[in-house]
Image (cartoon, rainbow, N blue to C red; front, side, top):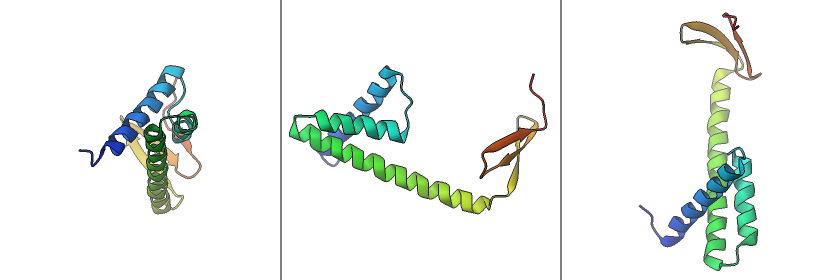
Length: 108
């Protein structure tokens, strides 16, 4: 439930930005979403929609910071060591910090 109409409008604008990215064939990432919202805010002539764009940008930025904090805590917990993962019966070793993934099963 929305506390006020500005929050509702901010979510609508956020949806419009995501839809624009989808229709343009762009990847939906934090960076592309923030760029789309910034472009929308710069071109918006209606004061309420402009303020809602800024609110959507603020929400997207705070969400990005929250995710970065969680990712950092998980990376610290991994301590850079290799972790074994068993998926679909195939044993894999993943280097969490390096992003490398090796498998004991050869794919043809």
